[in-house]
Amino acid sequence: VITKIKARQILDSRGIPTVEVDLFTHKGMFRASVPSGDPSGMYEALELRDGDKGTYLGNSVNRAIKNINERISEALVGMDPILQSQIDQAMIDLDKTEKKGELGANAILAVSIAACKAGAVEKEVPLYKHIADLAGKTNLTLPVPAFTVISGGKHAGNNLAIQDIMILPIGASSFGEALQMGSETYHHLKAVIAEKYGAHGCNVGEDGGLAPNISSIREGLDLVKEAINRTGYNEKIKMAIDVAATDFCKGTKYDLDFKSPNKSGQNFKSGEDMIEMYKELCADYPIVSIEDPFDKEDWEHTKSVLQICQQVVGDDLLMSNPKRIERAIHDSTCNALLLKINQIGTVTEAIEVVKLANDVPWGVVISHRSGETEDSFIADLSVGLASGQIKAGAPCRGERLAKYNQLLHIEEELGDHAIYAGEDYRQCL
Ligand code: PGA
Ligand code: ZN
Image 1 (tube, rainbow, N blue to C red):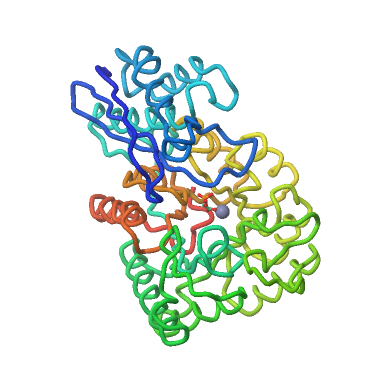
Image 2 (cartoon, rainbow, N blue to C red):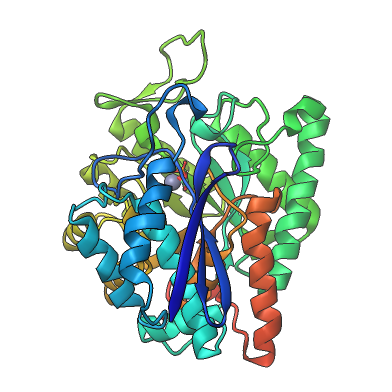
């Protein structure tokens, strides 16, 4: 049983406070921490921050910590960590608010993850196996990694409007090989960029993607194409983009120059212009997935991208919110879910929304946040839920590699039973 829960404040990869918890059972201590990103709107679970401007610029999480150490701890000590849904429900009942704003979704999620880790050890099975059991799944699958190789948008200080240019090594035969392909492409890209823009072009963004000062999407895609050519892997590596278009939507237009100080106003695109641009990009590059091609409320235009690209991923569009997901399924607005566990707040609810997506069936991308920790839980989650895809940033920077390296460990542990999603990354249910 759970004997003690102790939380503390630590810093995430951006140097911003976040919640870490140590949960104790008779089997040992289980530690978990939660990530944080730029809030996408009113439908996501609420991250509790102290708001005292004199301390960490308002970002400290002492109230969330106190809630764990006092109220959550009191409710959960004595419970069996195997009973994930009961533990999560106990916290939801204690919180009583729709967005978990009373205790803080950051407080609740940290404990939920720590309990999940404890549950696995209690059952004496690997974490990914415990997650698969909780979800009622039998097939364990290593996901295709979507490596962010170029960063832009709000994640980097260059002029590139879109947030990520990613590569998906779907032609690899194992996760280990996919990681190698990702790393080699990344390093070739670094060389390509250094040749064209000088060494300062190789600075990285928040997710570890390279951030040369390019302003057009094509310029970025060309660099990545050249890097893939240099690796020789060619069609084994596909491309994807996260447009994160909500960040540069101005009324009904999209400002592709939103970060440049001396904008001419030439680069404002209408929804139709954007559609045209996506058509051309998908024709000229091996793009298999586009995330948030339009503003989070621009459902009609988003839907039309399904005619252009194999996969349309809803991130800000869905906010991992079951109601938004159900509506998007009903309206056929997109065909893949990006799951950010801290937008929903418990392991049980994360499993539930993945099931919603599986039933359609949609693709599922288990995702990191721009502010990450060394916790590798989402790696196990992606294998246990057989999500088929994981987005955890570049093959660079420790907090990103924590996830990819954990997938290496899992692949090694599964040995002959390891299955890499590969070409089936959209449906490996
Ligand atoms: P965020 O970005 O964590 O800053 O929201 C992640 C993503 O858009 O995939
Ligand atoms: Zn996104």
